[in-house]
Image (cartoon, rainbow, N blue to C red; front, side, top):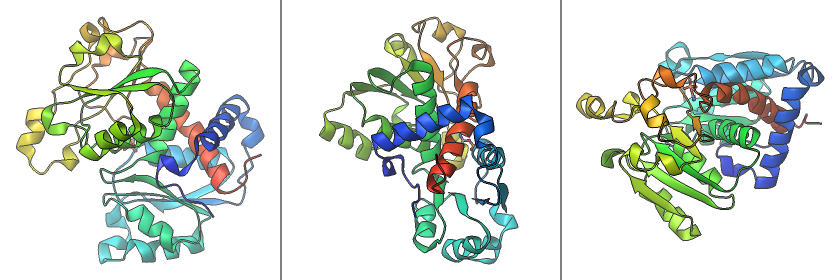
Length: 304
Ligand code: CP
């Protein structure tokens, strides 16, 4: 039995197989419409979500399976003090696979240790968000045709942003990737990530102004400043609108640069950018369904 805690749990070859399967699902959805008949997905979300929970549920329904779960810790027995370890033992009696989001880093890993069914980390605190990374990689591979030879800018909250941490780890395994980290000093990418890049000899630079680097980017990954990760409101208010990607900044970018965002966005991408051909963040949401379908099939060992 296999879990997914971190994008690095899959080798590059396994990821290629997963993305090939996701692309086949996109082209031939009818081929997969009943493959999970009789199977159940549990979505155990202790933190709010729109995309991740609903795309997992859509993925399972698209595969002919069914879904159960909770979307709020307050409506589960966690509110009475039940541990994650006990909860997953219970869920193992009801479902065949579980996607879990939790505000505490490592909680899905603790659950996986006690589970009789595959557990997928659907985001744990500021740590990892592997299925968002699978979504990001599939989007890039599908729209650009490759996962190597890019200069990628990651902009916004690089300190607390789990999507950023997962994506850097995953992209660091591909050839000729150069990172540009764009953040205010308070939200810099953690040292353990820059240490990892140094050890691997991967090029990166840290800048404050998006305008200073946007022209050289092949990919721009925007992120939200996350109110829920701040210890005080004053710091959040000071930093929340530090970056706003608008038409004037897009005019400085290359004609093929893709703009990605895990969403939700607040103000960091102006709605006027949505109609720009380089805006890929809503396409990214659709790829998130295909890749989660491929992941469910792979972990349930139903992939053909
Ligand atoms: N991208 C993402 O994780 O979105 P949700 O928080 O809505 O699931």
